[in-house]
Image 1 (cartoon, rainbow, N blue to C red):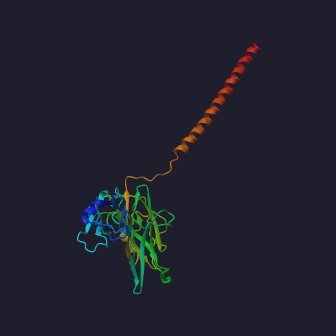
Image 2 (tube, rainbow, N blue to C red):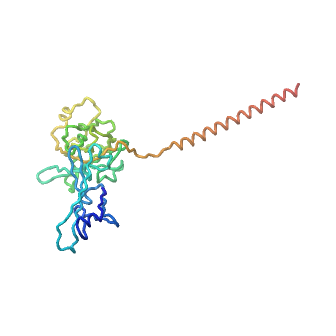
Image 3 (tube, rainbow, N blue to C red):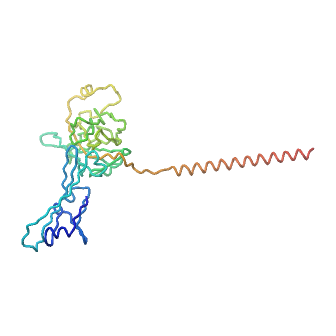
Length: 324
């Protein structure tokens, strides 16, 4: 957001040399010969921008407080100038702002026994190498792939035999995992989305990795992702068999034996960009060059063959005339 106010107006309204503070004072106010002005980034927390969100709109507000300088003993004319920008949440991606400016990876605590708690966290990574994760709200397009990792956080060797199993995953357009509108990705340990791929074996380690292709949902709002996680002991079978399509959830739970400890982890928001596509390298020019080379070679060979055939025909003709 950018805002400004004319110096002559402040001089006439306040009546002397002024001091200006933007919001809580973390960011400075610039000036030139005619104006005082400020610029804030899309990250509202950097300059103290106030942000309000409801079901339909997002409002960003910056307040410029103008007071007489400390050289003035008496001041009765303080001034506050407020700039507000209100966006429809449906079109928030076009304004390149997000509902929450920070990526949320909530840590869920699971109590193993009376003296031990473990943390669960879900992260979104930039690629299939899982070396760099996103730490702020991002915008991705339909051609992008989402690489997730769910991990068990522990600093003790006493839980080295505890395993993690991703039971189900889904997406919502709110932070509430129990939102009635959701998009299922994984159910009962088996993919229900045809772009879902495992990047590790589910249930054999304290981390689990998977990916899905980007998508959007009915309201086209930022997406939040949730997974139900089972914690398995060393005597429990923590793997899933998804080869039998007729295997129901009830039969699965009967085969698993005793009930596992479970918890839900969440992460988001992810803004869906339905317009801008990633620029991918085009190989059309290389293909055209190769086609031209092949065509030229075939053409040259064809002309050579025709020339040789014509020369042989002419030589045969003159040889027959000579013999006559």
